[in-house]
Length: 327
Image 1 (cartoon, rainbow, N blue to C red):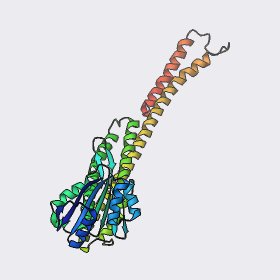
Image 2 (image 1 turned 135 degrees about the horizontal axis):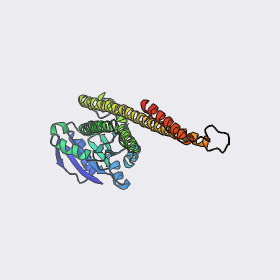
Image 3 (image 1 turned 180 degrees about the vertical axis):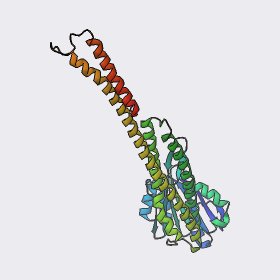
Image 4 (image 1 turned 90 degrees about the horizontal axis):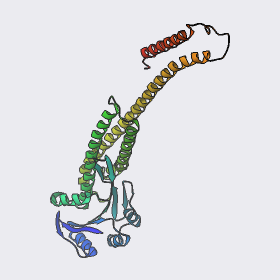
């Protein structure tokens, strides 16, 4: 559905149009204004009306109606179509939620289509309405404001992920080490969140490079420095994500090494106790055989001598394993 629709004249909100076709004709005739339509998860019939009025390409319309698009930018005749993925981070659950925002900019119009609960477009509209000097640059200023807000959110999320990763690192390398299966699950879940983060930021590098270089229609040369700033921030986010992924892989490897060391320690202890139990068992087994001719079998001191031998062997093995750190 359409959540907001307005005509902006010379950077200021003028009115809400009654007819989209007349509004677009008025905007183009004036030369210093444009129409901005914001939609949230529109139905096919709702969006068809907008697509027809603004002559949007069918392939772009199909992408806008279907969610789960990767970030991209495509130039069609009459419009520049951009997809970004605003992210939200739940610090309590350490979970990233990705939404989608499609932006059409063209001659005197902007159409934004939101899938999910992110308020990026609405916040950008509200912020830009307080800065008419920016909004005066037209549809490309809207595209810049949305991209800038999305990438700034990426920077904040990268910082929060770094804090959570440091806490996870302290947990893994603590003296107790925590429950191995639980820690492994936390590491794997964190790695999934970093992967979700990468899916949103990595594909956006190419569109931002094109906008920063002015190699896109409807992008004024005066806006290139602003898009270069966004591209620079995105590069910082990509570097932060790569650092998070490397550190997370190192933490996982260190945790698996710790688990292996603990298992080796446990196996050594089990082997040591088994060896101490095997010695008297072997001696008792030998003297348990029913042969008539066995040494010391008829001696009165034979039984205590065998017990003393068992105790001596077990004591010797205990101190030997203790000295080698097996017990």
